[in-house]
Figure 1 (cartoon, rainbow, N blue to C red):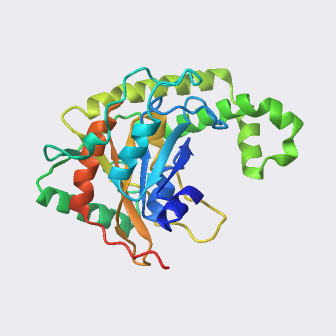
Figure 2 (figure 1 turned 180 degrees about the vertical axis):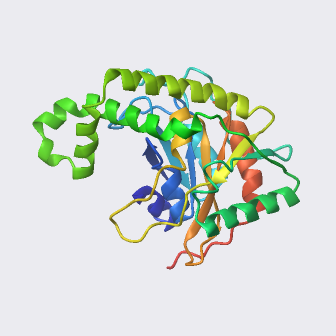
Length: 300
């Protein structure tokens, strides 16, 4: 959240973040900036203190999609120090900032509509109307049935891998861990191996089925968060709206889309195909212009 706030207040033009559940896309939406989480394996995680090796992503925060493309251009690519990085060549993302055509958009209503605050879904519908008026093809998509178990499976994978990685340090320096993190590690150490392997199988199957869902669409669109930023410091918000894209490893970008009734930023997230960040960036740039989100200027 600090990285997103730094970009939002003009302290820096761009910043990095890591996401296991939703820690790039969610704060980007709350702060009214662009947040890009690329495909799992597109950016090296070397130097990042991990929590869940199969879910952790490195992402970026910027004020515009064009700036996100520039940062991704610098960061993307294979790194021998991170064996999970892909050897797929990274294209010129800076050149991908312009879309040669209008996008075809699949709208994910399942789960998102019923779990959004009324003003959040209203904002999403207004965004879709603007994009459709600008020429985009907009259709509702049918999500895989496994969406219903994705959040539980994600929790099992995250807790088990977190416990496995942190156990040696945790046993020696338990008092240095925050209470919430201690709880995650202790719960993760109790999860049976059968449950972990089942969750990993659900993960692979969900990714495969998402490939089918995206056939015929350039991107999927959902609200970035279920509500505006929560009050106080006790909670950083609910990651459920971002979890499916961390779980599947699909590239996702959050764009500012307007303001709540209290004047807080709202956002929409666009989901692309694996390693198709060039297409996602081009389409996100087109959507950024079509949305024309009017946010309050940052106070001097």
